[in-house]
Image 1 (tube, rainbow, N blue to C red):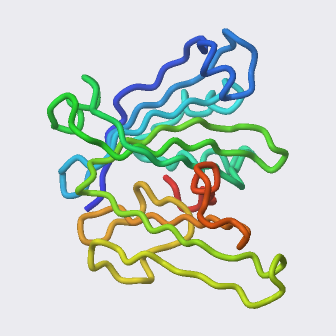
Image 2: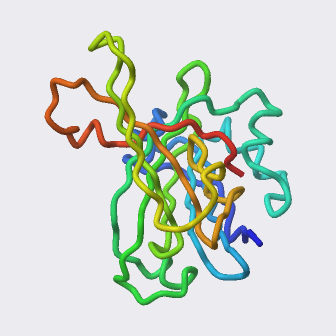
Length: 213
């Protein structure tokens, strides 16, 4: 069964890099939420999320052990409608080693997500660090039919686990969907057929933040 632990919720001043990423003034107040995610009591992912104070202040008065953070945002008219995700690898630091139960320097799968509201406001900067043997991502590449004037073509990479196909939804599902002990996620990226292969920027995944807890 999936589970979570809220490790820390804090209000503090943003550093220069955080302020730039959130599109706010340097040293403006932000809210940081650090959570660990589990499956059958085994660690799966460590999530660190930053919010402008106008967004994150609602989390300071809620029980995040029980409530969905995205549901809280929806209730206040701040539902994310778009997210930009970048996936890469990273060695575990001291904090990740402690909460994920691995040695420092162990390889982790990192997903950095920027979520936007309906008016283009940046609502969240999140960094999710997954144990690589507990996460599974599927990326679709598609030719834009508007460019070539023909039917859309799509190829989907086969998942490493044997979870049911209907469990693989569009958008990242870091907590609410688990299949076979892994976290299935799906993104989609498109590029023009004149490109021989996607550039680094084009392979950055773009998915909606649906179904996130």
